[in-house]
Image (cartoon, rainbow, N blue to C red; front, side, top):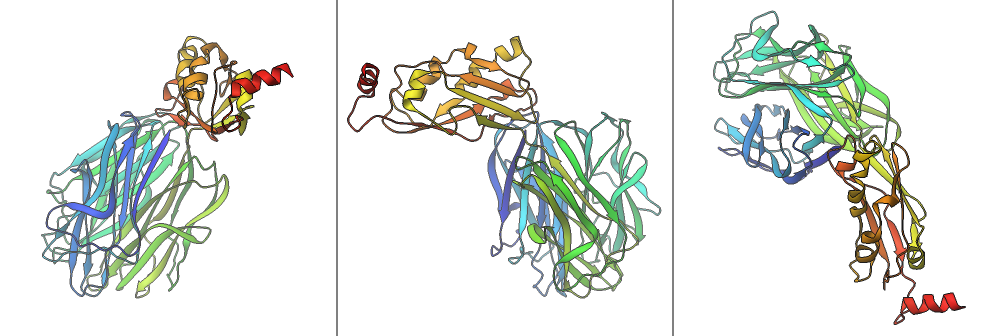
Length: 528
């Protein structure tokens, strides 16, 4: 089962960072987590206001129940109205029930950073039940970059991967900001080979710099697989920040997932004044349906040889959606950065969709780095859904319920009912109890019909279909229409860790004349 919550601050909201960590406006909410065994994917993207004529910086980090969690990242704007946004990705497990999730930030340096009121920022939480965290490395150990690429201290692991899995590989690093100017480049090593993007990260010498976040989706691996976050010195001596947490995580998804897109490119491209597709970061894919959640991850390294700032955003069929991200370079050093942008979307219609990452010039003329991979990856997390049909759908008369024989058919997609025999038989009462009316009449569905359905009338027609036959219920009397919802308990399903609500609901139509007794009307009808 895929859960999805989105906390997005839209255009027009502004907020300045503060000395201590505080919630970013609009990017916090309390939600219900379905199961402690689920993996929760947290993704965030935040663009800073570029208009302040002074250097300013902020540090961002996730918080769960107001306790800081996972990696942090520093983002900044320089005094010539150039700067970057920030992004983070992180996974946790072991939570259930009600929890508050937030993206928090604090000021870095002496001047407070501000959010951009013209571009969307976002924080999203995706619950994935059929997944496990197989690598969960974090470190604050001292480390220094040297050419060529070497593993970042503390960010390596060699887990055993199940065949057929799709893997989410997440890394967040932060360089030390108090040691002068430096530039390093970072990448992911998967199974002994570089996969996904490669991004520059730098510090400008005024204790302003950027951290780095990357997320890549891959498959086709099994057995013992080595993973590492790597870096290489480009200019001066870059150090890891020992006061901030850096992370490497790998999530193994073993079913209900489609890896839709894996693109890397080093082709030349230059942005324009309007949003246009970045060369090669476009793909046309087939989406399973509106119950799925699509997770997008893109990373863009810029040519660092000029003063440039670009804005980037995901698009579907040329229509922008999700957050926007700033990335900039500084020709004086030369310094520059690449950055990532993350987004999740639900409700896409089944069928063919064209997705892309687009960019536009904010200042200067932005060019892509032709020596380092830029990337676009899209994964589809399939939702478990249930359809409701039968003779009660879309509606049945009050008298038809009284007479009995009406059917409710529940059909699953992307899951199956428990096995025939004792496992399924033990779940039948829970399926009956999940049939609930929104009404509360004394002789209505909840009082008369639900309790009257014997478990023997719940039949496992196939691995994905259950048929419920209603008994005759003479005492069913309503004075207004009722709407009944079928909620299938997770305990009746093979895979899902959360209850599944079947669609559509069905209506029961009152036939009683105003002031009349339905039982007298039925008796007269029988006599006639």
